[in-house]
Length: 338
Image (cartoon, rainbow, N blue to C red; front, side, top):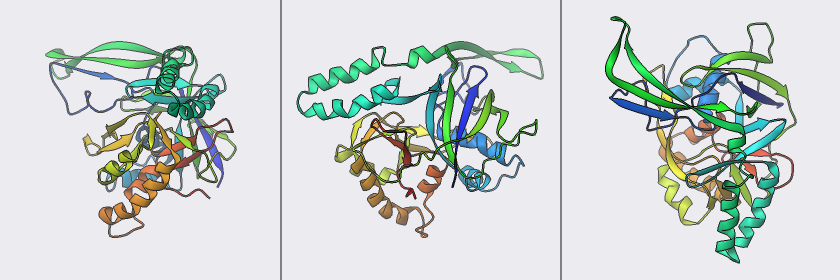
């Protein structure tokens, strides 16, 4: 199946909300939100599902509806692109960086030196986040905004309702990039099938979408010792202790994340445990996850082929990339690449 590169070009400041901030069901005297740097897969997949089948047909839960809308589309992502170069997320605890391929290539050597001197390892890792190797602040800016609540019937401002939001703005022209296998026709308003303008994210910010032919970026095997999470790796709570006890996460962060807001049903989507994007894992984690997932299938459904975590993978979660200097290759945790 052919691979397409999908380029998402922001045309204005963006807001990608995470859990713990204001949302449609929260009110109060003062609420606030700060945008994520990189949109989560459910946000991107929701946009593509809306484009692909904009017929208002909502059946079942949000994930069942979305996977039905996407059809045979499988999503891999997400990267940041600027000036025809890719930038990769990197995370250590609450520290976050965007790094180029040269810095990415240096990571295995740093990891291998950890056994010789932890102090040296720690210094080299911190140097990535606090030096020019971190391209985040060359590319990304933040725009603080203050909002009020309006009584539309009386046409007055409601008392005691105030919110602040930190939006993403951009110092340079950047794109968000995902890779897609399957049939993705955008059906733009001008008749073009390879580009369109669409609303993106919970606040409907405007972006331009372009679909381009691309080489097959899917990894054919599980080679290499280290992998970078390009999207959150969702982990069932019943196996998280087994994953953590073997020291299979080299650096990064494990946290509870929300998968967004289900607008059709006016409620928050589920919250799940995840290894966050930008974390680095060992190859053994992929193998152990698959072994443990066989047991988890029994818990999820009596049908061993009905694995909800495979459906999360379909919309873009669990995307990983090998940490080395070869060409870009991506794969999923559970899905076997052919």
